[in-house]
Amino acid sequence: MGAALAMAALALAGCSSIRGYRGYITDQTLLQSVQPGIDNRLSVERTLGQPSFASQFGDPVWYYVGSRTEQAPFNTPRIVDHTVLAVRFDAAGNVIAAEQSGIEKVARIDPEGDATPTLGRERSFLEDLFGNIGQVGAAGLGGQQPGP
Image (cartoon, rainbow, N blue to C red; front, side, top):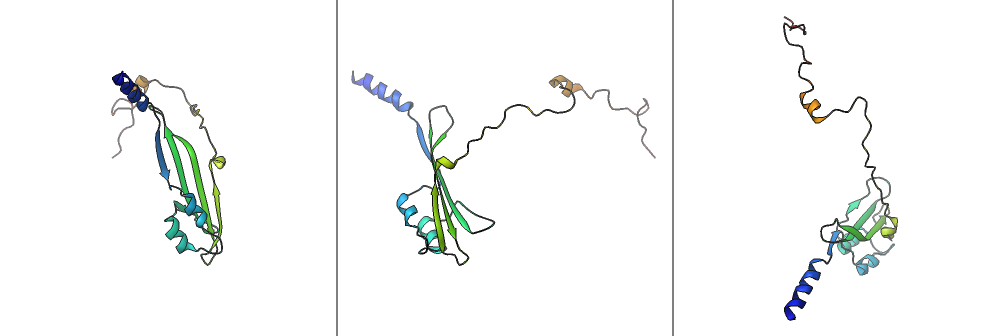
């Protein structure tokens, strides 16, 4: 009886999902500690670390992006939690805003799987492989003669 329970537990453990983290691992206490008007770039970097990426144009903004994923056996991982913290700075480097958003702002796009139409005709693999035989003119057989 004990062996059967152990085998059942082992089988169920094999079917459990795998959890993973991508990007910045969020700590709500640290995220809430960034205060506009109090913190600056140095204090934010010491508290949260290097940002995932920073804005290149416009107002200076640091982004801390992280996702928690789960993956069932033999499936692709799916995002179950997503967090973005945007810390905005003024010209002097002081924090003017810290905005947190989640998975509700993630846009899911589904690329079209159809083939792109092209001009010409469809060719089979063998036509592609052997299609140019006899198409190039050979010297002395009416093809283009090499110049002097």
